[in-house]
Amino acid sequence: MALIRWDPLSELGPVREDLGRLFDRYSNLIGMRGWQPAVDLMEDDNAFVLKAEIPGVEPDDVDITVTDTSITLRGSVGQEEEEKAEGYIRSERRYGEFTRMVTLPAEIKPNDAQATFRNGLLTVTLPKAKPGRDHGIKVKIDRL
Image (tube, rainbow, N blue to C red; front, top):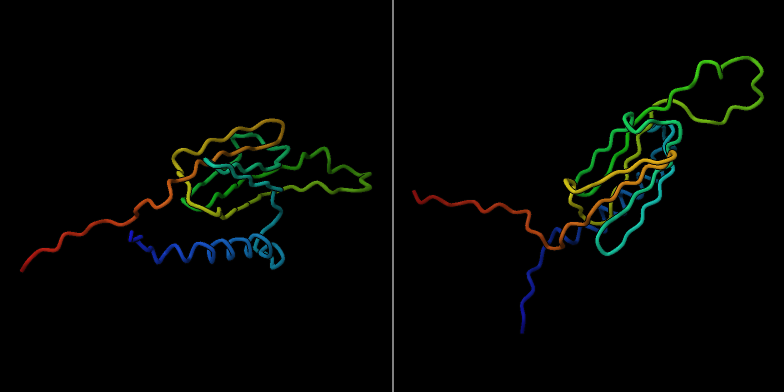
């Protein structure tokens, strides 16, 4: 009979995913965010790929922060002054600062993340971490 090492923290994974989705879905309803870019998150065997629509933004004006389990996009879309002229009938484009945080369903390798930007579409590739990697640090016990 083979013994399998049980990791009690692995039970928290689905809870973390559910909470992340809950905040992603409802936080804008309670005023925690201004506008935020539309994103798609895809997964294959080796990585997650996040695509975000942020037209009108220069790549240097976007800040991407990646942790083991999340990605946060921050930036700003400026409104052109000449567009504030009289005669507007409709104005639907969004301006100002944005923040978009997405909780990932599995751990990634933040140092290996890569991003490209083309025609207003930001694509971030987030390689997955190997499952079962050990986060613990062995502590030596001194005899007194």
